[in-house]
Amino acid sequence: MLTTSVWQDTKTFFPLFVDQLERDGAKTVYVVGASDGKFVVPLAHRGLHVRAIERDLRALSGGPVTFPGPRDGTMLGLRGRLAAEHLEAQVEVIEGDLLDLDDTPEPADAVWTSCSWHYSANHDRPLADFINRMKGLCAQPRGVLGAEFMMPVEPRHHGIEHYLEAGEVRRYLPGWQILWEAYTPPFVEAPHVEQLNEHVHRMGLVIARRPEHERES
Ligand SMILES: C[S@@+](CC[C@H](N)C(=O)[O-])C[C@H]1O[C@@H](n2cnc3c(N)ncnc32)[C@H](O)[C@@H]1O
Image (cartoon, rainbow, N blue to C red; front, side):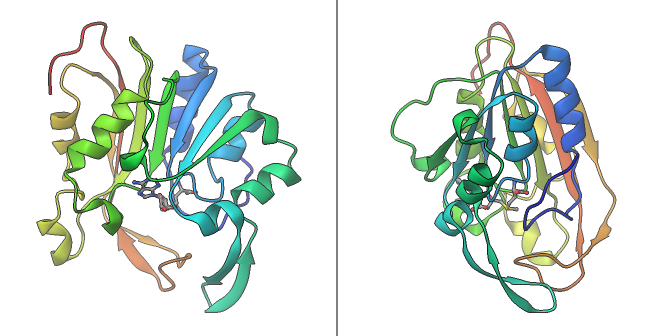
C-alpha cells in the first residue's frame, strides 16, 4: 500500500481493516488522529469518502519537523498532500480534538484510529470518552470500529489507563462483535518523528462491529 507520510515506516495492522472495508462494501470512513494522511490518502485512493479528524494544526497544514538523524525538515501536512494528489473532493478535514467536537458528526460505515488515544492530551479524560466518541461515529447498526493502540512497555505506562493490556479493550465494546483482535510481542520500532531513537513498542488491534441492539456500557 503506497503512501508517503512522516509516519510511513511505523508498523501497522491497517491492511486487515482495509480488507474488512472491502468485504463490507464501505463507502464512508472516519480517520481519528489523521496526522498527515498515512491512512487517509490510501483510503481516499480506494474511492472511500474520508472524514479526517486531527487536533495538531501542523500535521494538517504542514511546517517544520525533526526527522531521525536528527535532521530538520518540513512536513507537507495533510491539506498539502491532498492537494498534490488531487484528493481534496474526497476528504473532509475536521480540525479539532475528537473529545471536544461540538456537533454530533454524521456516522460513517467505519472508523479507524492508529496509536492516537495514548497521547498525553487524552489522559485527563477516561479512555471510555475517546472510545465512546469513536463508537458514536460508527453507523447504527453494523458500523465497524478499527483501532490499533499502544500497550504498556515502560513502567510509567502501567499507571495510565490509555495503555491497554491484551483483552482489556473488550471492556469498552460490550455487545460489539469482535472481528479481529491481535497483539504483538514487544518489537523494536525504527526511529521516527517524535521518537528519534530506536525504541520498543507493543501494539494491540481490535476491529469490531456495532450490534443491532446495543447494550449500555
Ligand atoms: C501516532 S500519531 C499519527 C498516526 C497517524 N494515524 C498516522 O500514522 O499517520 C497520532 C495522531 O493522533 C492525533 N490525536 C491524538 N489524540 C487526538 C484527539 N483526541 N483528537 C484528534 N487527534 C488526536 C495526534 O495529534 C497525532 O497526530
